Image (tube, rainbow, N blue to C red; front, side, top):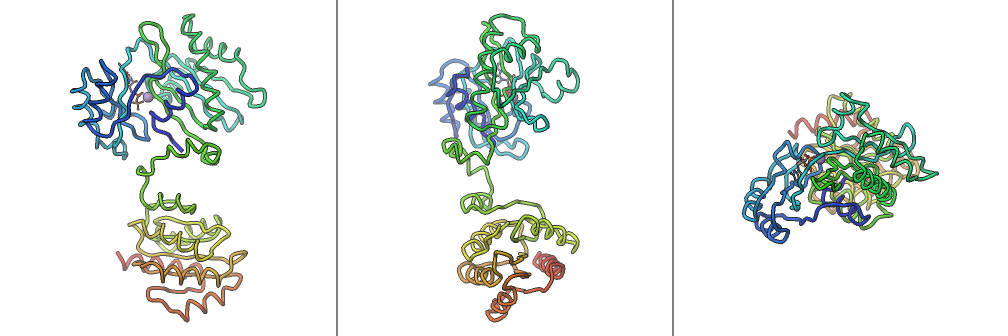
Length: 383
Ligand code: GDP
Ligand code: MN
């Protein structure tokens, strides 16, 4: 889960990492109030879950509360690489003498957290890594031995930070960054730029913070930071219902049980000349409740023109799935045609139930390929 800049900074602050004081705003009027409260020059920053906001016009300095209001009006609603700006972070502006880069992330190859530090910050780090790889100091931390203070000193020297005052602050900051990284089960904490003010003060100016989704249950306060409005309706529904859902860009909605079967269903739909709009994995379940939940999620996607159920009964029983489908159809109105392929445990019983109930718009097919062909055909005629 990616956090907004202001959320990452909030976590940094809790661990004693120096950040600038700021306020959240969702309207120009609020931005003005924030400017009044903070006083002096402020920076108005678009809060979107993507980088490169500065270049896209999403970050602007303002000399007064009136100007903050004006800049906010310009930035709100802006589309930055497909992300519409609905929130602003108004921060007391910093004077910048130097821009550094500092991050800690996982190096999966080494199976260790990796720190990177360079005095050539502010720009794309990929560029630095490519053009002057020697300028990028890298340091792995052994997760069992833990972080040792001498490592931060080494990193600082390797990056060529020579000023004593800066060294002291950066060393302390590296230690705290590792603390927050571990404590939050983060997979990325990136600060670009890490600035040095003309007075020699080191401070975090930007934050990119990603927390391991699988660890969110251990961090309810971080999980709560998720901005549901930033997700499409069906993704929100999937999350709430605990349904495994992946959005794709075709027109056939796919519902299967088990990751392997769902993957091969995607292939068969492609073989039939169609494209999947999305897929839901019912997992080992497939009871009525699970089917209703998954159908609600799938049909909330406006791109879906037909729905393909591909169920192989193992632990999941075909009759149970059939009951789920019929119950779902009784409870909700589904505009799109549904094609069902049932096989495995109690599949015959399931197919018989569907044939007897014979709901309109429901088609039962014997094989996976014929089901996919039917679904693709129906998606085409529904278009
Ligand atoms: P990004 O473009 O999404 O990475 O957003 P950043 O938060 O990194 O801001 C982009 C650039 O805006 C920074 O590299 C700075 O040069 C500039 N900037 C951001 N905040 C301030 C500030 O408080 N004062 C000044 N002078 N410049 C700032
Ligand atoms: Mn940045």
